Figure (cartoon, rainbow, N blue to C red):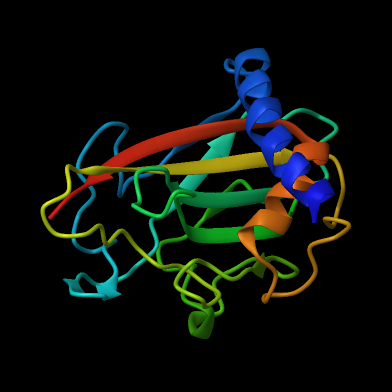
Amino acid sequence: MIRLAVGIFAFGIGMANLATAHAQSMTLTSPDISEGATIASEQVFKGFGCTGSNISPALTWSGAPAATKSFAVTIYDPDAPTGSGWWHWVVYNIPAGTTSLPKDAGNASKGLMPQGAIQSRTDFDSSGYGGPCPPPGDKPHRYQITVFAVDVDKLPNARGDAVSAALVGFDLNFHTLAKATLTGFYGR
């Protein structure tokens, strides 16, 4: 347990250093969410008192290092009142030839994910996409959408759709070559 906690701490530090080292190499864009803009109700969660459509945004990335063997995508809210943030989407083992995810790929029943990609458990305690849904009255929360270029085809410890975001993060700490982040905001 202590080893995992140290790995998660290192994940944050290691990812900050990677962002600086590779800031110019990768880009991430979305026709549905603009950097620094308010997230539309189409992407907002449906439940927990929120009335959005819970449709994951379309994403496109470029500039991954040549050694990339797979990708991972996460959406994280660092402002959630939990002491540890909130994971809204965790996808890993996305094949290296993939450079985009279509709108609503986070809906597992639609089959829009590339073959081999795994949507892991979110903090809503389910796999697949769970949109923004901050508590009423909070200032708008930041929703950090990140794509990771990974140096292995499959993460070694994260297996299946029931693994936690922390375990995926642990693997990403040791296998990320570069990353790009897009941040949107939402409050209610």
